[in-house]
Amino acid sequence: MLIYEDLKKLAGVSGPCLTIIQPLQCGARANRALAPERGAPDNKPDAGVMTAIQAANNLLTAEGFSSEDRDNLLRPILEAIADPRWNSRKGTIVIFRSPDFFLAELCAEQIEPRLHLGYSFLVLPLLPSLLSNHEFWLLGLSVKSVRLFRGSRNGMTEVALPAGLSSSLAADEAFDAPDHSLRGRSGAGPSVGSMKGVQFGTSSEREHQHDYLHDYFRAIDRALGPVLAKDPQPLILSAVSRELTIYRDVNSYSPLLTGSIHGNPNSLGLEVLRTKANQIMSAYSETAKDSLIREIEEAADHALVLTDPVAVAAAASIGRVGELVISPDALDFDSNEDVINFAALAVMRSSGKVFTIMSPRVTAGVTAMLRFHADDGYGGQAMQRVAVGTAFKK
Image (cartoon, rainbow, N blue to C red; front, side, top):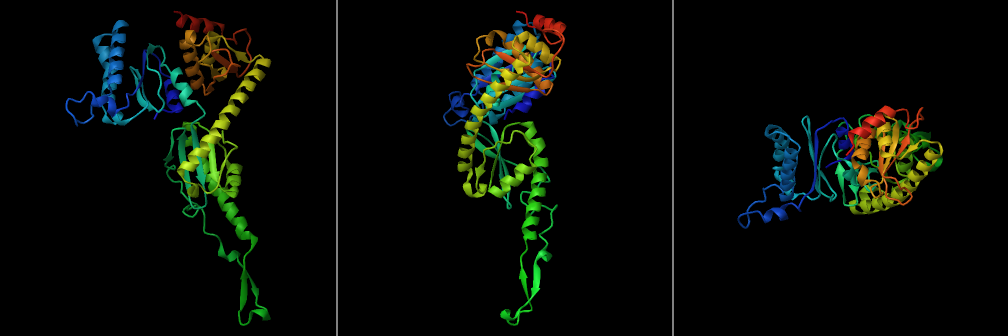
């Protein structure tokens, strides 16, 4: 499944870059029409994908690629889509191919078909889906089990915990069993007859269990950090109040949403967890959009905003853009798609953040929030701006 981290791999690849975005035609249903006999196995490649590859071959021919070069570029694509696993899948197949790079993955959403050949891979059509704020991580916490899920509006799948991380506090070898010597003992009084002594619990047991959970949850946070960072979606917690409080205290991942699912995740069940998680995500999306717009307005007050696409691309090319906001419904978006696409990849390459937003309050196709001021009106990179503008001149 295609994730945002995959797009970051594309940022360092230069052209010629071929991008194919093609919705699968409901897998097996489309291929039944191609089967010569009723009941024949659905093992032919998706018809729509094959048509897209033929169109790619025609485009390469028109652009002057030799037969050998076309074959070298398209052969890995044909081999990949021949895999029968695509026939039972729904969504959109996304293919990125350059002489030194190849990636074919599935995107869960249905995306308009696109064929693009250019200096960079085309990623803009994928961003609304991958950055929709409706995808999330869910971490279910309890003393007896820890479970990680990757979810969206369409479903939720459990993800294996990193190797070496125990799935429960009891199974974690880093922690000893509670020290039973913490039980107190007092001499027996006359009211207990012949008993030699009376054991009584101490608050130390409860304190030590809290400490154990604190250390165990800290280990979980450390282990999950690299996993979550590869697909940086919001994290939702599901646990009882004590576990929620302790994990929030040790958490280092952002964004950890303030909304939580209260209760033992194992008792709630997957469907309840998914429903509640989507409710939390809907509220978060609206809050995040308002917060982003306020951030743009504040940056503009400090002269740290650019909206001219070529100037934005130039600033991004030297790592000056910290946050890039893309508005696909803006009037100037389509006419500047290649330049905005270049800027998005450059921001990913410099570890900046990319957002998409649909709001009448954001009228520019691209808005860059800058990391720092510079000397000239285009951010100290007038020559880069000229180079970027020339590269994408029609």
